[in-house]
Amino acid sequence: MFDALTGQLMTNAHHLAPDLRLNGARVLLDDRFEDTSISLSSGLICRDGGRPVDLSGCVLLPGIIDLHIGATDRPLPVLSAQLTAAGTTTAYLAQPWGWQGGACIPDTARTLATALAAWTGGIDLRMQLRVEVQMNAEFNAIARFVRAARVGYVMLLPNQRAHSSQGYMANVSVAQLIAELPPVRLGLHGAADAAMRDMGVSIVEFPTDAPANGDIVLSAATVMQGRGAACVVMASGYDNHTPLDVVRHLVAQGMPLPQAWHLVSAGPARVMGVADRGQIAVGRRSDLVVLDQRDLSLVATVARGRPVWIRPDMVDRLAG
Image (cartoon, rainbow, N blue to C red; front, side, top):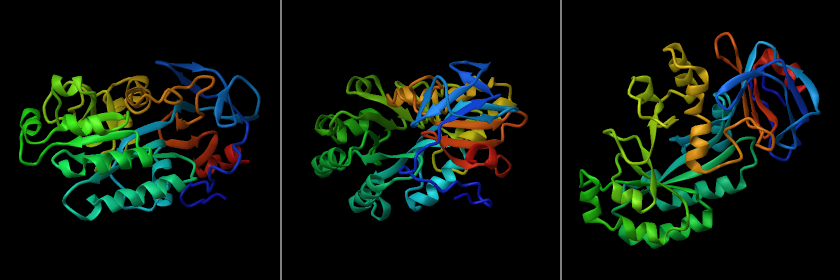
């Protein structure tokens, strides 16, 4: 069912994705655009076949992968609707595990894990668990939770009483926590030194100073402020700018669209080690964004071959 007011196509993962042949668009292949057609079948990009869809006047790009969504207070269907309306097809929901109470208590993380396990919506929602490194007594429980909930991304938060990686390394044993965790992508909020890198911390989220050791993830707001030169990945963070907003801003400032799009799709896919998305190629997930070539406004969001958000004037073409 289509909601004409919001553009949201009410589908879930149990609905079969239609076989489509997308024609007429300029397609982003690696770092260049080509005038070509692609086919979608069974949630994947394939060589040919499918009902023809005319996307003349559009550009076709891999779906946005957002590594930090600070919105775990919203019901997943509401959050999904907001994300698909901004071109996001994979999102990591930032869930703290800390001492402050409220949303940071372990039960909140468990509730989110249960909701994610039952999620059957169109886009891929995952957890980024944010762990305060001074919580030594919780390390074993955290490790058990990460295994049970199949969390693939853990962000370490510095000790509030320290001001450098050396300081909080002295206060708590980060190495102890890392040793207890199963294999996951590890990040550190704020800064990382060579010692952290040697322990497997490969991602630096929202660093206060540059350069930093690791793949740098900056918030959309930071990039909008012109401080994104060292950025490898751009994520929403806790502000109201979406990655799509910032891509439009960067292009308006003169950055080529393929380079700007790398920050929100291929870059995050590489950093997280998810090789099945972030690029338009045969055999990859058919997570796609369709933009109007004139102003880069969103025309449609496609998740695993299913149109999950469509601009009203394009409904008959994509959802017919």
